[in-house]
Length: 256
Image (cartoon, rainbow, N blue to C red; front, side):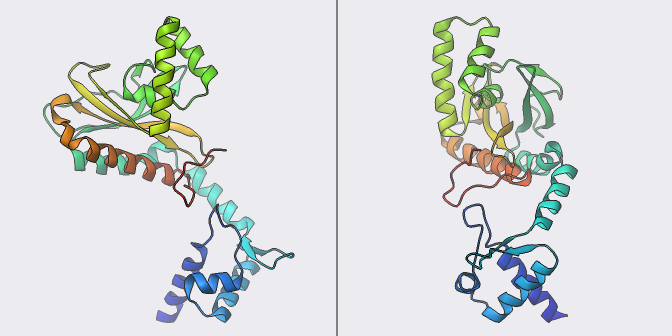
């Protein structure tokens, strides 16, 4: 029994070597990466190949993941919606920070809250699931607006009746938000409140939602700012990965 478990562990170590940046591996490369015996690696790869989980490139003899993994991935993707993927992480973040956590998407050129976890504190931000707000005010909307293309951004801002100068200023701000990967606002939409928001990516590398932490402004001092941003970014990336997103090995955001 123990030997069977060790074989499974070795199999998982081998599978974890495959990534978007390195899709094909030779037996020699896997041996150098894992330290496993070459005959063991060969035996495991052949077993996977027999069941459709691995294929071999006839040109260079390297192995790559087979169609059965795509099938399993499709099952996972279809069985887990965004809220299911996000809620456990949101609950943990709310427990750690004692602040309100929201999940927002764009719907009809507005920001709409689709899930929330309330702060346990008496003084807190109140958010309603289904609540709609404009995209250009507050961190929750801006993080979503920042990841639209320029033409869509301009069209939405025009619909809000903003003049050209205000539009230009907002577009510059959105560029910075996109580059930074997060946004912090204080009292912008709700007086006396702060918000920190980050994007949520899907398996195609597209932003599909935004994660926001919000609370009374007095609880976000400068000394806590970097730590708070880090926690929200980490939670946002964890949700993205649960929803199928994969970072490149350099840590860069992958766009398709």
